[in-house]
Length: 160
Image 1 (tube, rainbow, N blue to C red):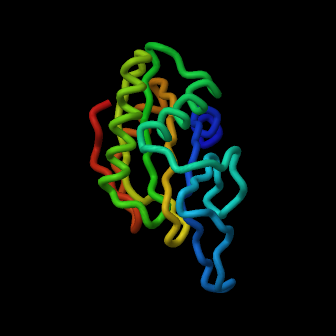
Image 2 (cartoon, rainbow, N blue to C red):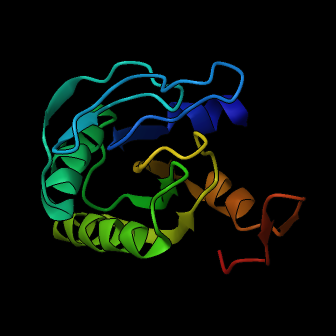
Image 3 (tube, rainbow, N blue to C red):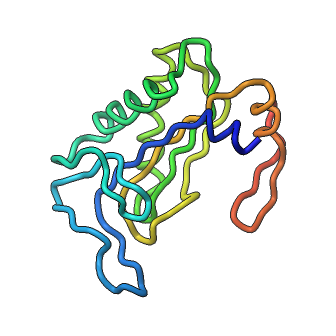
């Protein structure tokens, strides 16, 4: 099932600031205050494009265009959406990003089954976020809807 889920998920991140790994004691990379890096990895791996800071809507449009084209996702698909903060992004900003992602999905005829917005995998105090789309079939949807109770994640039974 993990392999099936991995084959049906696409993710893209954006970094606005570096993180400082305590053991190293210095930023993992440098980025200007007026810059952002698209596609950057959670550990500071280089992204696909560094450029001027864009609005949240512009940034999400770029991210979603790349994500949607990669699987691809099609009209009639159903997805779960994860908007993940990288450590220093307020939850309100994650919801702003989700608002635009949901608008794009609706326009493409893609239904959102469930949304997760918060800090699920962070990079210390890095400012930025990632968006992940999991393309669902009946089996993945049924499993995703199950309750979960762990030290870092809780979920009640969802309506599948």
